[in-house]
Image 1 (cartoon, one colour):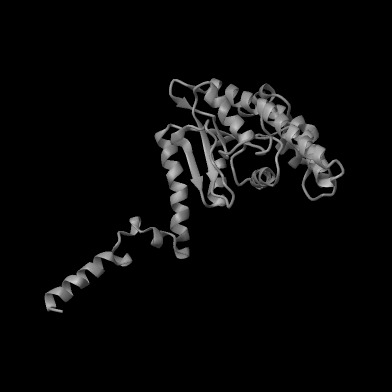
Image 2 (cartoon, helix red, strand yellow):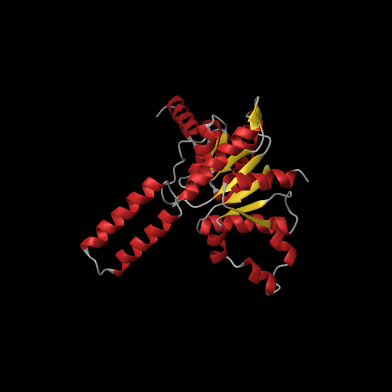
Length: 280
């Protein structure tokens, strides 16, 4: 091999080497565990810049379960569970599946309430290009979809903060496309939920909803975030799930901590609590 051929081959190897890639275009480099701080900063900055471009001044956070769906969908799930049970009437798991489907159907009205809440807040607050009290959800199905859908119904902007999960997780179709984000880090996602929040409403849900609720209550209790009302939809559901009064009676929280929480059953009731809170 001649000298010229050897140097030409080496130049080709240099140009193809990962080290020669521009750092911000090098996915392998950016995916290295040592680049975690940089990736977290990017997840913080990307939505921040979009919110500024879209004139999002403040938000209302809507949390709730993915399994609470429209009545028609809940009825279909119940019918399917009953059909499976009919094929094996004494199977305890299939009987359990029917009971659970019945309970989810009983909560399907919360989908309608969340949708009405999103519609009410967005109609009231998004006028003349001003984007206050923008509905923000986790961007998924169920209650999250309902909140975004309410804003969509009236042509208003809404935000979806989706998260990358092992199972398939797709954004619901009612989020404003320019305000739909996918996160890798739960911590940064939670930060964006609360940075601009003027209120937080919590519908029945599971572990994820409880995690987000208690994260907010802890920050409110310790004074580490702005004062916002925390409104829980469905007093009966929540009082069966969490005995807040017992925590106070046992002395593990202060009596005044109970005032961090309000309950509502209707969209208008929740909105009245929020407006009264900020009128103080």
